Image (tube, rainbow, N blue to C red; front, side, top):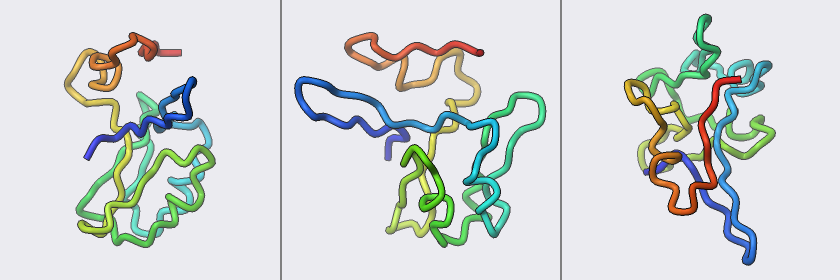
Length: 103
């Protein structure tokens, strides 16, 4: 299941993806500790083995970037494709509308 959702409301399309917020409400709302922030990179990471499927992170995400995977009883969110130079959504964007820069 892809981590990035594309909203299509022609003639405009836009991606809805995790922004790894500085003050991430999803991390605060996660009762199981499945969502954490990496200290050095600031990336909000997800441990699927800790997720209990309560969906509190989905409810609190102000961007709607975290989705439910009801079949697996856990969430799906962007992890910035660890180990890759460029996230898959950026590399595969047919219009080259997505760019990856560290701010």
